[in-house]
Image: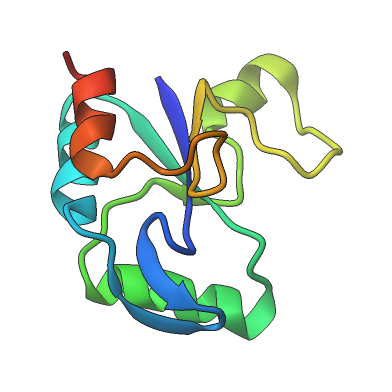
Length: 113
């Protein structure tokens, strides 16, 4: 499954653009999802220096991901390069979901029963 995950307040606790720390259990949860074969796309509105700061922060904190704001190569092979801004994913995880972000332990319960 392709999973798109928001950065601000879903992967990292932030007061945009300041990155304050990890959302509890994010690293372990994303590691487990990747271990089960899921493809993780970090999906963020950050641009330029703020985007680079987020990527560097995730790398330094060993937060696993496969792509940032970019399609999974399998989707590009099937459908070609998309012209619009939204990446394809089977699931989008974001703190602005209807009902709010349930926390990473609940995400794993839902996706890895």
